[in-house]
Length: 134
Image 1: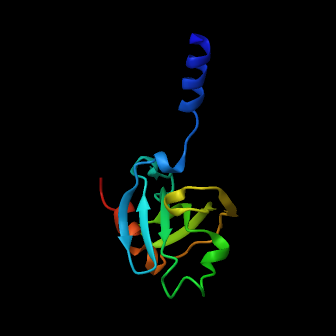
Image 2 (image 1 turned 30 degrees about the vertical axis):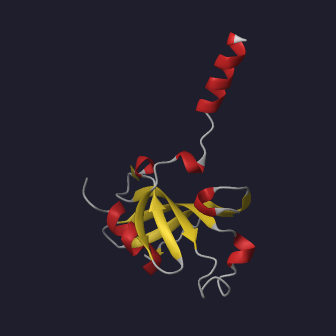
Image 3 (image 1 turned 90 degrees about the vertical axis):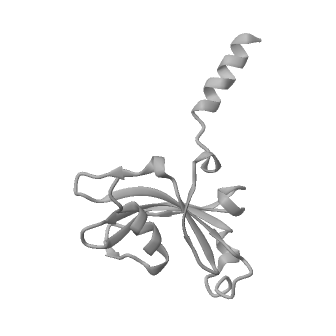
């Protein structure tokens, strides 16, 4: 019995659930609320900053239908990379979840992109927090 309990505890330590992260509010509007996981923040060798972002969507927003939210899910976790000096962004990819706050099943995954682009307006607050001096 004791060995099984210890094995279960060890197994649970290695299971990282999205809901277990310490999500902090980055910003919100009528369509989405964006959080970030401060423990995931990493400074990269090229001066960029990487961190995980959770976006929780409002299915009652007028933007939900044109965004095709019903096909995607109610939340997503993306690994975002910001070049603070050039105000640029790129995605390392992410996952869509059936429920709010990255709960429920993973509905789909999406790949990262290698190209940099202007920081999207919905990530303006996240960019400011990611690039703030520590």
